[in-house]
Length: 321
Image (cartoon, rainbow, N blue to C red; front, side, top):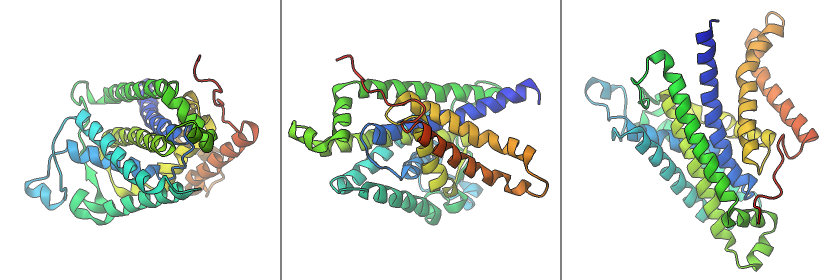
């Protein structure tokens, strides 16, 4: 493979790893700092992707309308789509939180994974909204035409990294503020935090909404990179549990760990099949992609045994005060 092809492949890898890093940062706000079990990341993923797609694409007309059913088509700029994705995901999280955050134990986990599957099935069956199982194709790419097509991935990588940097800085600022310290206090001992006058429910709700908005942004970035979305993309495996693995491997309660885990796990997921094909005996090539699941699970178990807090453990002190 020539140098240009290698660089293009690395750019595509870094784009997807950066998008998953944003997801991981959103989950870190939920689980790492607040202790909220969100097993429905795929739902926020889908809402963010579809909302941005419906906002930024024009409504099909003429012959195209016979093949693509799309109830909404506002033909707005990319940034409007990203903002819409964040708002829609935040509103969904607000609704979920108002209904479930007063419950005990794992009811939030049960409700979020159930809602995520409901969203996926809804988009799959309600063809009038976003073309059903065929999904939407030809989503607009931001700043397309500014550079030659063969260099576009490098431009989009810069866009993703800019979003990742801004979100990372914002989360770091938030967690090192009084608001972030309250989140950690509630995670450690709700009763004590409540006794000190903190509204536990309100802070949980804020954490859920903020993390969901971050996930919505990641969903929008994924949609415009792939330029095509359909409900089959938002399964629990690819939309939820791989992100949990990334955060767990990198280190919960640590934003650097969330980003590191995303890049490491996505590298293992993306590159392992190539090396597996080199070592499996003839006749087993079709099974090689499935060995990735075993490798991901093996890495997760090793990390949990050797470094239960993740590769980069949680910082015990987040403020000089």
